[in-house]
Image 1 (cartoon, one colour):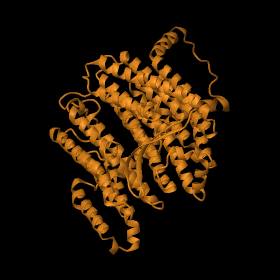
Image 2: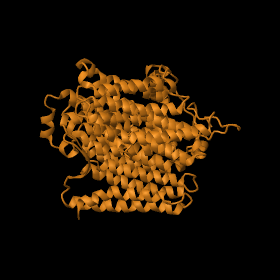
Image 3: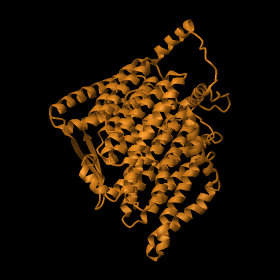
Image 4: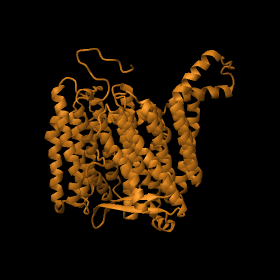
Length: 625
């Protein structure tokens, strides 16, 4: 048995299943469900067989450097796959749960308008799940990480004609993007620490890790904290816990596979995969333990007072994942893997039987209700309990915290940029950009002081553009162009670094330029046809009227944010690999631009095409309905 081909088949099988599901009509429910069931069943059979074979062969660590996509003298972008005990557990649990969900959904989703869309997205998610689990370096992992984020957005917004699912989908995607800062920062700092695209196989070499970390304490702590931020955001740990209950707006099967069993555990996976790097850093270990402990305690109390079964299960899962963070930090990896498998199976079962359980409990409460005879709020202990109870009812104001101190701050900052009108963009900022281009081609005539600060200034101009795009409410075309121009600013800023050549700029800008132009034309077409009702002040639901236009705009949004469907994804890694180790502001401005720009694009797409279909001459339902 050629192990490399078998491991690659774990990516190929769900990919072929996903492509096949796109070819059938949405009315052909039998064919669509069979593709999903047969794909996941065959994958489960392959995974179980290979794991038995792998165990018989004494469980060797397998690393496959599959494809070198781009290579220069000092840089190499390659796809790397990795198989070890962590991979085997995650792969088995993912295969089993996805097969179970596919079989369950065949009947559960019967006659739903989005039947095909649901199975397309489940298979797309499964592709991203396997890709992430098998990834052998940060670049490969980030591909699957992005697929998980997009499929999560699509499944939460499955009932796209309703206000709350769409709003919560945008909110969850926004938190995911904040977590992406951690991955981008890790990739950037790792390039300078290792001077290569470090593989997880090399991270297991303790002597090599120790050698590189000597005298690099600040870089090591920075990378460790960045990994923790990414893991906490993905696994809904503090302060990001509020997104998980909001993600339950999707269908129950998608809630089970995403936020009960699989996707929510990827923070634990990231910690397990990078443990050899940060195990010798006491500060990072203490931070991980504190985050896990605080999340477990607070989520436990929140779980006890929830009035809906989905949110109760969500917070219960967060509690267990917090404990898993502690287990990983203390080095109990086998226990953490057993805990992951048990929690995944339990939450899947609870979510799938939740409709029946709710029905039973309602009848039971109706016939056997007994009022609680409390002692009031007398005494410090009872007052303390009452305080915890009220805080838990409010979910410790976690959602309010994220909204007030992050998203509202970004919106308020953007409101100060109202001078960025289409006219000013054309007559002021574009000329300023070409002045920067002029400086680039005449660097020899610049003073060292100007050349030192010019990249940060240009990147900051790009950041201003995406902040304005994020807060823009009246001109969707302007919001789109601002994100596009930001990419040009970032490319120009990094171009001043001597080791970033013009060919790499082309790789980066090719994808965003094509996506930006096509997407702008799509929005312009919509704006022309719906002149009075195509701003960004509400959700219009035009996907019902312009399905092909909505799909094209969505794909262009992915391309413009650097999703792995264009060369710009490689370009992003090139950009960060050439930001110097001491250029903290340039790295910060560039990463914030990518993150906020992605949120602005998804928000723009959601407001124009998702939500209740707007009928200008008829009454429209309230948001709360």
